[in-house]
Length: 117
Image (tube, rainbow, N blue to C red):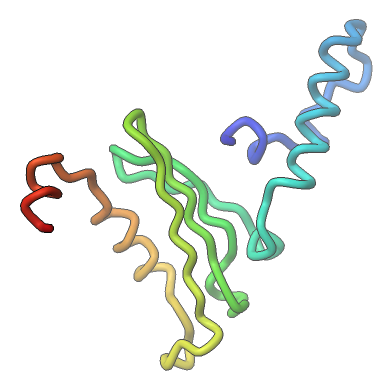
């Protein structure tokens, strides 16, 4: 996902002698046009909390209906969809609030998860 979302036309090699390189870059660019969600129209940002790394699709300052956080670790992944269409704060979800969500995200042990049930 990182490779797809970080790829852009300016990173293409227009004079590549290898059709393998050109084909790989075309596939990356095509995939990037399909993969991002609608919130990504206002920006795609890299987020990281040490354990999880991923992308925030959507700029909260644009005040769109939603934002998407896609975070990955060696032990799994999580997606958080923030809907702010009916959010009571007129400013909407702020970047500091999103950062707080990302920074507090962590994996809990299996025994702790079982005890919660």
